[in-house]
Image (cartoon, rainbow, N blue to C red; front, side):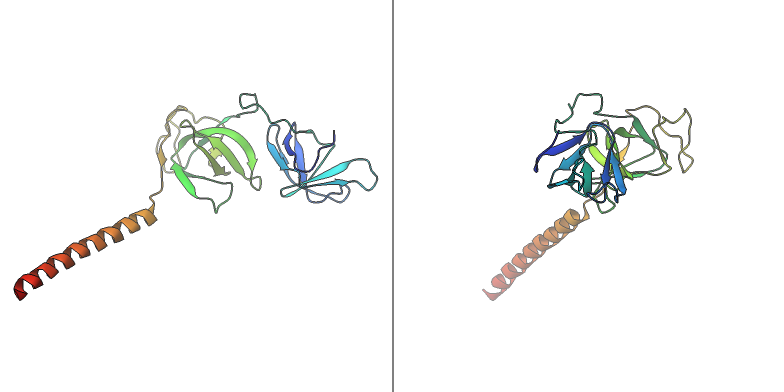
Length: 207
């Protein structure tokens, strides 16, 4: 089935994102898993031998021979979530799959969330949904595992890791910009009061 420019495609199986529109000279950038959004088609390019077409999407090309569909997966389908993710060290959860993403909160050793995707960004990020319903992105590392910690397991600092899916501790970063703004505003208000009192005193002396 051929798709038109502007169509949003989804993986209906393993789909490779390639560097070029020619499958004979291309290499794989990353792979989409079943149920993942591949992206909007920006251009359609027939192969030179007319055996198929390449679709230009964000970051590369996919081919019409791949298992792709224009039907979004159901949110309640079997592909809506994956295994649970756990950490043995504090882990930062960001608003996008990149180290430049803002830190939404930091999760302490224990349950991180349910894996929605394990191939985000450059392929080294998890997309997770935690027990509060918050969705964030976590950088892959040896401190992460889809196996629940054994009872009495220790974290990287030697403390016992809490067990249980609902046992989660999240620390949200302080918004220092807001704190600084509040301090400046409070200082200006205090100075205004001081200036007003001194002005009243000078007027009373002048009488």
